[in-house]
Image 1 (cartoon, helix red, strand yellow):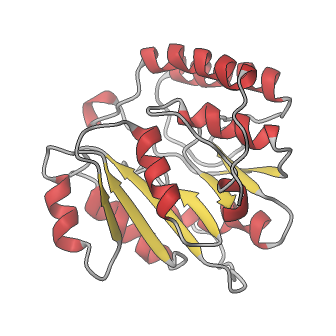
Image 2 (cartoon, rainbow, N blue to C red):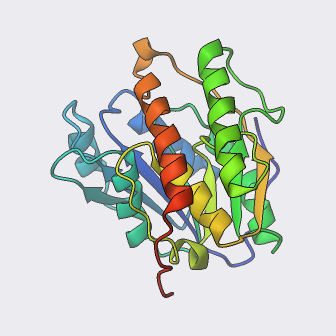
Length: 242
């Protein structure tokens, strides 16, 4: 889905890409992020890949992207935290490496922040963007998790688990994040809601992959998300100082 160009108005964009065993897709996702032409820096966090991803990244990093390495597998949440801590842009955007999400959507994601209307923008696969038809029970699970999250955060999101989340750096620096794995999605939503951030939701395209193509999240992660939603609602860490 091609979006019209967006003038960032001098703001710098950091794109953070957590990676674990994505050799089949990493080259293409880097190409697409570069082709979008909006990132001032691309930070790729390799979470101890063993399938050749790390070797490809090390070979191609100079002059193209910053490569941050985990020496053991820590999970998506820890990889994102590593990237967030290193980001130097005015806006930080999360990009998965598996080609399910298209960097051509960056203008629609970033516009509410660039125009000064939002502190945080979250994508939604359920607001009308084109998407691949896949698992019914994944759809049901996503909607149930989002509803459960909304009950505690008092926001009306449609897709809490969506990869695409963009933050003003000032907001991100205030978040004391703790998640190691996929609990990072409900944690991010809970923390920005607790800060009373201006949150916008925008439609994004979705090209979901199946398990044969390497999809990693399972029903166990869904059950864990329920606990994370409750935990993040009940226990609130102190804000970091900017």
